[in-house]
Image (tube, one colour):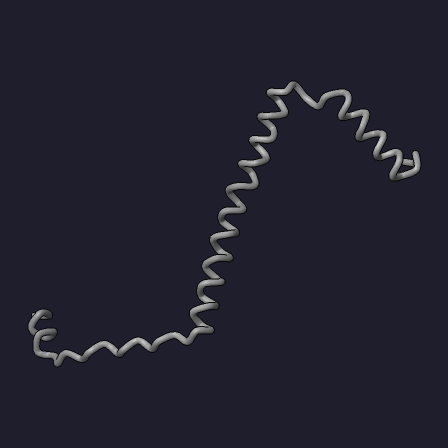
Length: 82
């Protein structure tokens, strides 16, 4: 019965979509790009931190020379004060 009601109704064409202006197209592209960059950042940053951690573990920690250099730079910048 429901099929007969649908068949008896006149077919109305769907309204034609309006073309987007160049500004609206640009805004949509920018929005998509920003979302893509955010998702990529949420995936890549933790991955890079984890890779740095694995490299740190493989090397066996921070070399003593690098620690001494960092302390020397810190003391130079701060004038030896904490």
